[in-house]
Length: 293
Image (cartoon, rainbow, N blue to C red):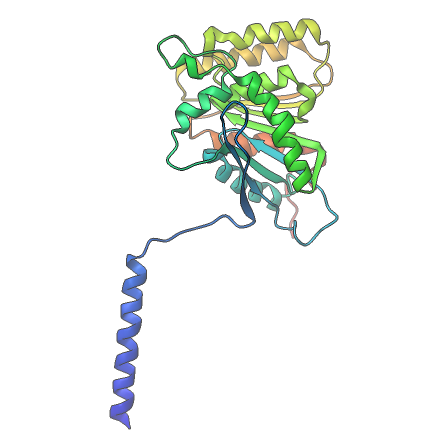
């Protein structure tokens, strides 16, 4: 009997060892809980988009509840960042739960760097820099307004009163462009290290036109730049900050922040965290220091 037991134990050990070795050599795959991808039909411009949707933890358990929505440019890069940011903000009670919508492109092995120029730039890139494939922000903003938002509002339990747009770099420029073009489309705007420099600071002239036609700007706006970014990004961000502060728009709630010692990409997590905390402050469950539990 002891021999049988020893043999059985040896076989079991070998099986477990083989399983462990197999597990060690297999790739580990992760998925984001409560997320799904919705592919939209190809539009008249020949562009095909997908919306990456992240639902709050309580979404399935509360069928009568509606949620704020945070839309992100460059969803293929920033959807994961924002879902992680949401978890921290909700845990700390600095924001309500919200739906995250990453705006992206349908298809595999895509060149996002080239594709995003078409949508996110309000003016063409300089000649010789693929300028024929840029400068269509006006078209993209209409697509967001007439296609993306109605689809999300129809398919999910959204709260249209609390809708936020986030973007970084060229997406940050688009975020500011969207605010100056149709400010009421979103309640809040978070522009991380916006590429104000594009088009020889074109945005400053666009802002000038907006200021002449609009006496107020009733939105919540957060702008940030990294403290170790390239000079052009820092100068552009400081210029738009100075312009915004000087206007003293009635209704505008505004915050600007330098993310110390960070560069163009590393500053984005903190910018989104602080930006969404600022935007959602009026509806946050708590504010200030946490109490002992």
